[in-house]
Image 1: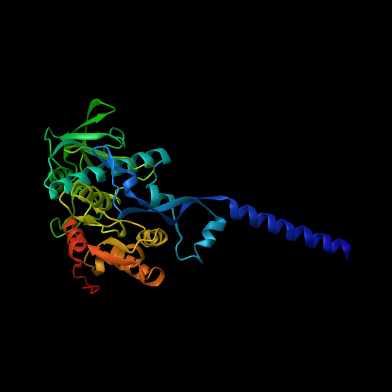
Image 2 (image 1 turned 180 degrees about the vertical axis):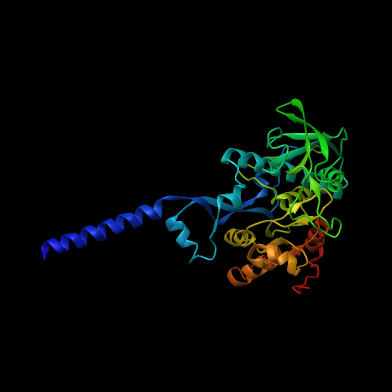
Length: 363
């Protein structure tokens, strides 16, 4: 009987040890959880001075941590945690390359924020378009051995452009297999590469019913901005493009006399284009929770009109605004979610309290 008990104990012990090892063993993916809602007055200076007004504008983030078995199981019971594969998060890039890409996104976001804020405030600003940051290169691209992440593309077929949209349009209607020559810089040195265009998957639109052609790179603008007064931004460890909207608000209000916050604790998220449009981002439900933890009462969320096709690809099959609104209603009822499409929508709300019309109607 004792021998049998010892065998059972040994088996149970082995199962417990195996379970613990499996639980702590790292998985290839990541756990996404609510990050911080950082006060932007810590990061932004104008003429060397910080914002000292009573109101606060906060940039929200999502925290990434290495997944393991225990953390993965926790995502099944905690609605504010989710699991993402390494491919979903980094696109298969190394951690060093991923960090570099996030930094490029942030530089571009800050440049756009400065342009929008200074133009809206009627303050002097000049821009110099350096070219296009290469953020990733497709495995199907004919340039995968010659163009690298971090390169800046300066011309294509000898043509220089003032923004990435013009670069995209130049290639869009070319036939698959058209030979093009790309000029680029890498670490301050000039280079040139030649390859064929490819058809880009998932690019069929009303403008391009047959999809677009391209060279298989993901890109963002590399723009040098000079302003009067001078703006300095130190984003610290924060990367990516999603802080563009909140940086724009912070810079604009600081430029114009800190009149808009009116003592409020305001959070938000969204990309900012150079022409003032707000774009969608990822993890907005977790950013709502970060804003709640920071005591915010207002949260700006990107708004796009929903459609059946769009909702197929949206996180939890909801647009940013829908997901933010529903998350706040359930977990942060004191947080008012404000939908915005443009920077003007933000200013209008802060000045008058008016909110743009929205719809959940799907066609």
